[in-house]
Image 1 (cartoon, one colour):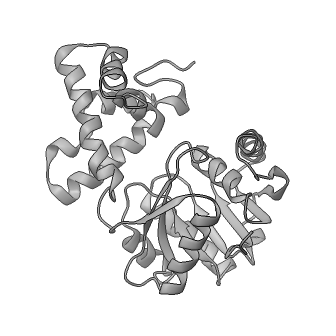
Image 2 (cartoon, helix red, strand yellow):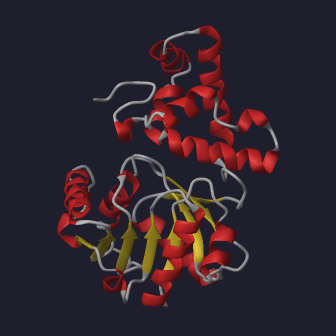
Image 3 (cartoon, one colour):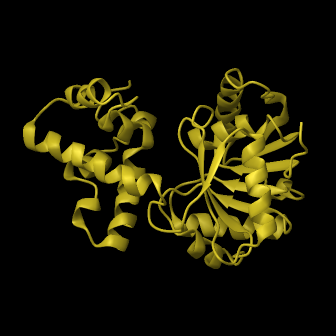
Length: 275
């Protein structure tokens, strides 16, 4: 195997994206450390990683551990943040990790925030790049890479090399709202919600029209549940802020679900009941 540019990978977060990335990273990096907020989160995350590793050739769950102490990230070659979609939280985390691991490349999995702004706000503009992966991470082959102007060629080269080693197809896209995939995808998803609002058609029927009629692997409403309805709102707000198009904002149904605590699959309820 080609030598990995990232021997020691740290991943901040314990959710689906973080655990999927940790499992995938274990195929090429001998040390993968997850930064989590509680022992409960650590146990849950490591269980998810072990389960994911069973489906990934070459993955090794013994390479993945978890910590609550940010100082344990000292010496990391790469930090991937996969925490809540909040610019202030992400920038603060990147800033704190940079102090502990000053030589580490810093990647963010944000799906809606400006990479340039996160780099500037964290004080690490020359090392912060976008690593936008897709759920479920072990199965989805695309990675959108976003490199602001301040990021050097060596950082970009390491990012591309690592994506190749973990068997992902990396596509460089501009640092614009929604990047490429979400800029094209979410107007379609939101239009499907508005269609349901107007017609009263059941979610399953809307989704069947697209899975059976257009051969999409998943219908738009089920996909929104998978992405997370709170994340969908954030992406819509980012698209609208750049375009000024009100159709880029999440429809009322999505807003109402989130207000009621229904975030999709991760909460057990959205357009569908997952309980």
